[in-house]
Image (cartoon, rainbow, N blue to C red; front, side):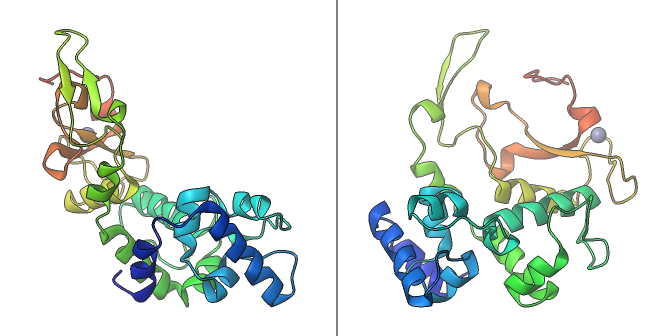
Length: 235
Ligand SMILES: [Zn+2]
């Protein structure tokens, strides 16, 4: 995603909370409404919506803080939440979901919500792939606290200072699953063939033993192979 808004987003990294909320209120006044939807803000706002949600949390929270009316419509679900849901469905199926199967109980949001937001289902899938491919991990790791990057081995008492934090981002997890073809690296099972196979992405060298949260130290495992592994080095 190298579009204009992404650039703006970077540029506005240090904008204060008050400036952001003031801009949401400005859009409400401009539209002569007591609430602003996520999409309306996208169209009229000065900042990218994700700049706001990254700093202030959910869109509902932003409306509350801005003193505007809270409207729990699917139109207010942030892009990131829609991408997360799409990612979950994709992982459950082990492949790209089709228009027809994208519904409850698989998906929490209707295919129409995606189509409206992203200009068609195809557009939604394309935006999702761009979202997944933007590598923010380096930037995110820079913001991690020392505590988030420190681990102590329970057995040896050795302290590790990591470059990365333990948590695997949604983006990175999805990229590893794609790389591994949505199949367990140990037994080869995949939800593509068996609907009940649940996949996880796990550290090869456990983080608590000094392993980093980087692609070369991550692999796909099914829940059965992953179970009871704990921090054992040799499985
Ligand atoms: Zn397995």
